[in-house]
Each structure stands twice: as C-alpha cells, then as structure tokens.
Length: 79
Image (tube, rainbow, N blue to C red; front, side, top):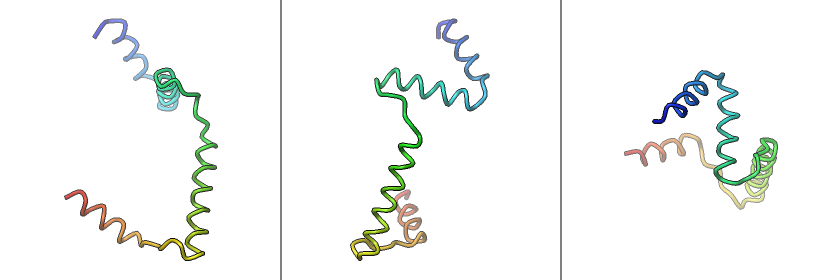
C-alpha cells in the first residue's frame, strides 16, 4: 500500500465511529454516483411497507408466521 494511502487509512481509523460512518457514506456516494441517502426516506418506506403488510393481514391476504417458525427456518438454512 502506498504511504499516502496508509496515512489516510490510519487517520480515518482514528476518527470517532460517527465520523467514519459519515465518511463511508460519502465514499460510497462518490463510487456509486447516487445522491446522498436520506434516512427519513427509508424510515417512511419501511412504515409504508409495514402498514401495507398489516392491512393485507387484516384483509386475510397474508398469514402471520410466528417468530419461532421464522428462526427455525433460518437455523435450518444455515446447516
């Protein structure tokens, strides 16, 4: 690794966690050519999806699956 890159890496790793997260998001944005993400946009999207699923459940279009069943299926997939 080139010395300047090593120096930058060492400096970044010394930053507080929040600053590193902010930097990672900025770097990803520069690579992926996408606008900075708005966390509230994702929160709204998840709330809309949760409401959509709940309404489908109430109408009888979706079935509830117990957490125990979900975790059992996930454990079975790991084997």
